[in-house]
Length: 106
Image (cartoon, helix red, strand yellow):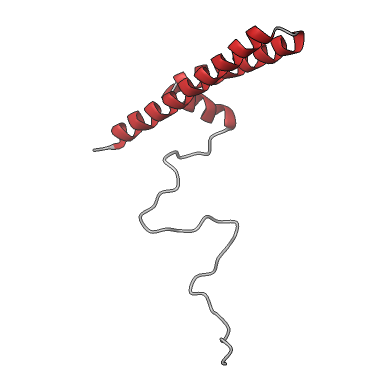
């Protein structure tokens, strides 16, 4: 069995630089975005998703509070409300994806 010889790459790979892929632009923006800028841009693109996330977190928090206080009926209602809010959030994400894909078509 023959052992392979040393491999000589045609182009040197530098881990500090992004790879160059022909016909691919890695970013549409000229400068890197901070977390805050990206968050604001995403909220403007699909404002319903953060509302759904907030509703989910609120229902979860209040449901856990009711569970801790011993209000089992209200706790169950809040857990069901949380499931509805999660469904609303997922539907908002899917609608946002469809709208975004329709905008990007020529």
